[in-house]
Length: 336
Image 1 (cartoon, rainbow, N blue to C red):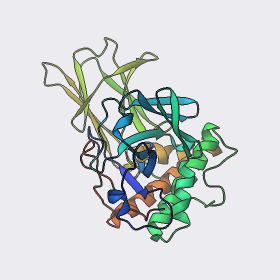
Image 2 (cartoon, rainbow, N blue to C red):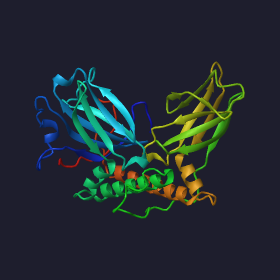
Image 3 (cartoon, rainbow, N blue to C red):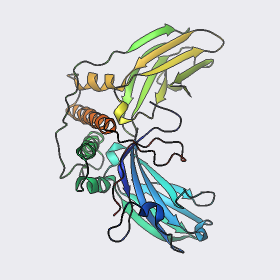
Image 4 (cartoon, rainbow, N blue to C red):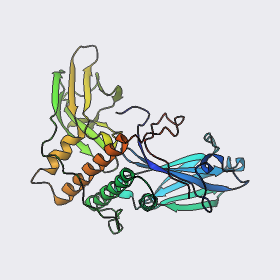
C-alpha cells in the first residue's frame, strides 16, 4: 500500500487555534489579519513516521526576506517564504517529521522576517494527543491515540531518548493485543545471476521501513530493484547491498512487500516477499531478545491493530488531495 505520493494515516485531528469556542467552519472561513503571522491549524499524520503539519496565516508583506524555521531536538529545517504558495484557504503549510521516540520533543516554530523574529510557538505531539483523549471522541479514536502514545513511550525507552518525559505519562496502558507466536513466512522465487537474497529486517528508529540485503560479488550495476512499481537504488554496506522500502503505514504492517530484482537485457528475475510482521513476531518470541525490544514490538503490534480498527470503522477523509495526492485517513475534531 505504498506509492510515490505518500499514503498516510491522518491521526484524527485538525486543531485551529482561536480565542473561545468556534464551530467546524472556522478552518476554511477565518479571515487573515494584515501584517499578522499566526498558526491557525495543525494536523498530526501517522505514516512510516509522524508528521506535524502547521497551517500558517501570513499576508503578502512576508513573501520576501522571510522564512519559517522549525527546530526539533537541535535540528532546524528552514522554509523560505519566497517561492511558496498558499493552500486553497490562503494558508502556508509547514511540516515537521518526527520519529516515534520524539512524541514529547518540543517542535519550535520561529518565523523570521528581515532578521527579526515575528512569531515563536512551541508544540509537542503528546500535547496534541491529550486534546483528543480528554475530548468527546469515538472509542476507536481514543484507543488509537493511547496505543500511539504507548508505542512512543516504549520507543523512548528502547532508544533512550527523552525518557524522563514519556509520551504516555498519565495515560499508561498495557499493550492490549497479543503478538502472534507464528511469524509470516518469507518466500523467495526465481533467480538472477550474481545476486542472491541474504535477509531482511525492520527499521523503526527514524521511520518504519523494511531493508532487504543482497549478496552481489560483482556489484549491482545492470540490475533494477523494484517494489510496488517504484524503483530503488541499492546501497553498499559491510560487503552487502541493501534496498530500503519506506512508507509503511501502521495499519499495513501485516502486509507482504514484494521486491523484484531484474537483470537488464535479460528475462532473469528474483522476487522476495517479506512482511514487517515477520520481524515483529520472530523477534518478540525470540528468547535472546531484550525486554526493551520485546516491549517496543508489543506496543508496535497493538498500535498496528488499533490503526486497522480505526480505518476499518470508515475513518477515511481526503482533506488535501492537492498536496501530493495524499490519502488522509481520520476524523476532524472541533476547533479550539
